[in-house]
Length: 624
Image 1 (cartoon, one colour):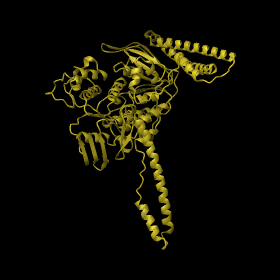
Image 2: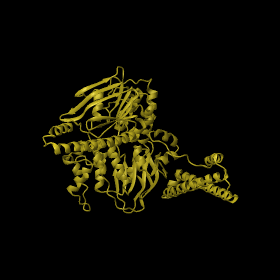
Image 3: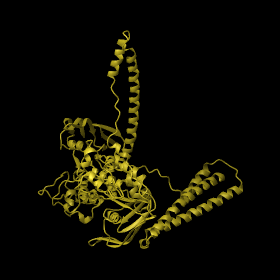
Image 4: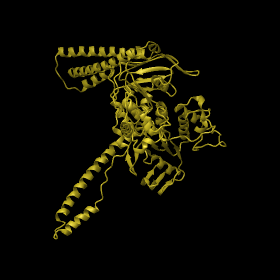
């Protein structure tokens, strides 16, 4: 469908890439990755014809059409959301062409709903929505048009978790080809059957999804290092001969031949670490220890005009918890985080910090954390206090860990890219580490190496961490508890993200949408399936002659353990029901107490079930 042959592109004296060749078929699903600045978006521009290569050819198959989603939306006029969604491949609709194709309208509305739009949003002017919502309308436009090839540049940046999972599921069944630039490894794992990496001016192809790409890349590096080592050994051997016999007349010709042999060897290239990969060594300084109760909200009320987001909200977080907020867009997740951070004054109720608590807030809009009129260096130095006498050298060291080096520190914040703003906001956290860290979409605009760095730093962080993210990999790596936010109600889950998927009403649907992660969890043992296992074991067991007392003892043990498991599971169901009841949250601290009790019960069930299963299988063996 698309042929790229020997393409190169430079800007001034800087060569982005050279010798790029690739064929994209109609069924290909490719992820395009590489360090920031490697030329990923530039390659897209060349494919789109918005720029021309210095050398080489880019050719489309006759009749092939494509759809492109840029990182930022095109300027908008007075068109409605439904107009954008039905405007086909037109990126910039004109005022003379605002007729809606009503044959596409039902399909467009269904897709808009999947992306989080309400039914009455369709006819509203697009300019009344934020840039992120306009980008969702452009995603709908591409899905409605169904071009032969989708070119997507960071399509998940403006999606919340629910919309992202819907979009991911939709693309998994998309009939055309796909090339996507993304820093979301779960998204790449779910969709891609091949990976393209732009690195050091060259394009490398790998089979499989992102995880397979990492594995194959490490294998290639190991082979490369081995080949380099062998070549250096051969060169050293040849050079030793030249050095030893080059001055002897009788051996000079052979020595010269060995010298030419060295010159003819094609050097084995060894991959050098890029600037992006050097970033992964930073870590957060450990914060001061807080009291057990970190923060508590009591009977909080919050509204925007007539729209009441929370009424009589109660919430408590304890030291060391790692909580992810999930729920549909507009449910109030960011509002809750702002209330906890005290950047949004509450309209009713109380917000109480625990002993020695130092909160820190990482806003979804990075400029909320930054001084836009100051330089990068000034944004760090302004955090200096009497207690923390930050030196210029220390500030430069912190900024250097986030790739702000030399003259980069004197850039104005207003000219920074989205990724640079995110890195600067993270750098500021290092200056005064909080023990209550509140982060709203921290991975947006970060590349994969930076996300890995952030995950590593947060895993070693000892404080309390509450966050919102649409990055499933990030959530799985860090969340120990889930708080579902919906219609002003908080429903806690005493387990990680996979536990939430299993236990929530949407568990089955959501689990299906997280394709790309192999579900290798064992089938839960229950009285019914254990009896089935015992029956199978009995039928295949060889004859044995245990004593009657021994069999009786194991029968009693199995019965007692089965009774214990049933009682614990009943208690678990009772606690879960209490946690889901709205009245539970009218009593401050009650939900937290129930949560702790539920965690203990879950552990007891796991232990009792293992003992019961072992005893049951032993009994089956004896009876066999």
